[in-house]
Length: 217
Image 1 (cartoon, rainbow, N blue to C red):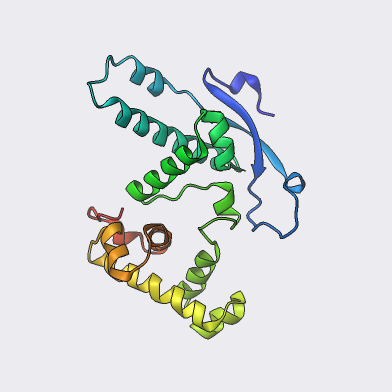
Image 2: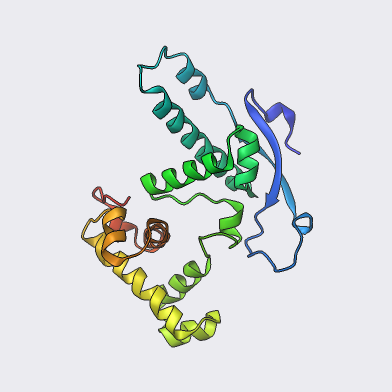
């Protein structure tokens, strides 16, 4: 457990699933996974300053609350990940006293607006809509392997590997043209979340694509 003399006011001590860097195993119960206790910045000096700014103009209160919640969700998820912990939407719902749908909306809006994927437990352990095999396929592709070799190494069919790589290369090509996530999604006929997955991979292997104010960055 973290030493209390290193915990400031507004910090929440929380025990969550440890990020072991592996996918979830079928049939493995939740209590069988390792845990880690982390320090979460629930309330910061910026939060307090925000509340002291004064009255919010009429009609702007809802938008301000939404923006505040979105930043808090991202801040807490990233803090946990930096300490080797993985949070779930359900945990964030309890911590923030928000509905699970409200938390999901915060995550979705953050990812669409910033292009940054948040390391939630379900996504990192391949239980959600952000399969980690895309990253492995892209890595093998970037190492120079051809689709048949990647298929053998990853256990996927050649057709599925070719489909993933085709989408990856199309996203890279459109990033070179400085297209936004929304425009790329429309052009290749894939949802924004899927496009964001490929944008994250492109950012990892080709950071030069995001220099000079790329709309997708």
